[in-house]
Image (cartoon, rainbow, N blue to C red; front, top):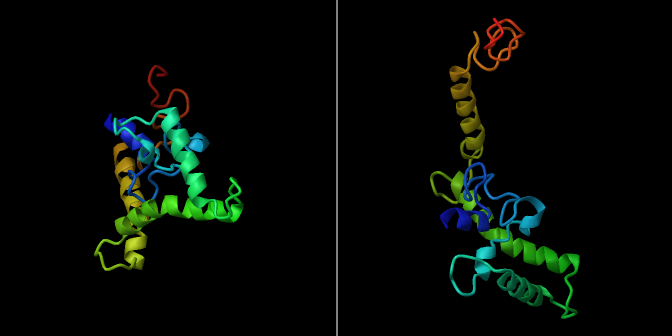
Length: 155
């Protein structure tokens, strides 16, 4: 059930739903079918942790009505932009707060490069765990080496 909720909320990204890459393009069905990670859990009318197709349809129709500024029962690009901005605001704030380590309401250079620093640490850990003289998958004798050079069953 928890996994289902995370998927519905667009979580399960590289750093979870609050990380700088979390929730991007994921959701109920993943990719483009996710309705842009709209957080469909908001449509769970009966609170059972599952959004039925009927609940989703009613919720989406309500959003259209709410953001249809001219009342013509369609969303222009400008109206959709307003809707989209409202839907992604919470995720944007979460991502900002993730980066703002000291909570001062501003993201410094040191804070904004934090994801790159994390990538570097992960790369270093991966390289230290891989075979080969310099770490990493080596083409000159490691696991991915040429036939007969350190590959299992090829000696």
